[in-house]
Amino acid sequence: MSVKTGIFCLLTLVFLSCNRSTQPTALVATKQPESFNVFFDQFNTHSTFQRSRVVFPLDYYSVTEESTDYELINQPINTSNYLILDLTYNDSFAKREFDAYKRNIQTKKDTTWVKFTGVDNGIHEEFIFARRKGKWFLVKVIDGST
Image (cartoon, rainbow, N blue to C red):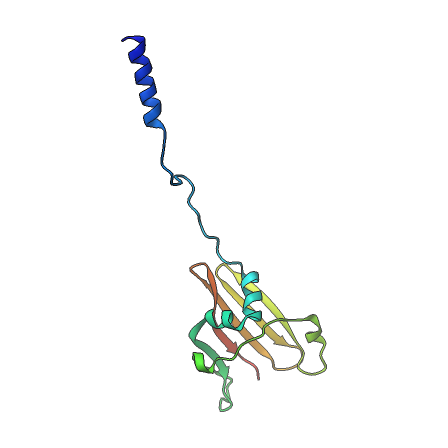
């Protein structure tokens, strides 16, 4: 094999091994799951956003007035009966003279519970959020207040 043929073969191999594609090859953009804190701030401040992140009909469990055994009954809420929620909290709420309560937020994997518990009163509400396809949604409300 002559030198010219060797150089031609080498240049051909280099040329063919070059990836001249304009599209990215190795990097694939992956979307990060939505942060609950970012979602929760928007949920509490933007009514349109909040309505878009509620699964309707919303499961709403509560103790009915007729119930003597404090049984929770599901009374689903549809879009026309839904009232905008404000689940924000300030530490002063626990020190009120009347209707004092505390808030606790607990997250396990793709579920978050926002719980409001009364201080020496019967307040007990839970708002349950689930992450679906990377986005948070309100999926259930449990009002066990007495």
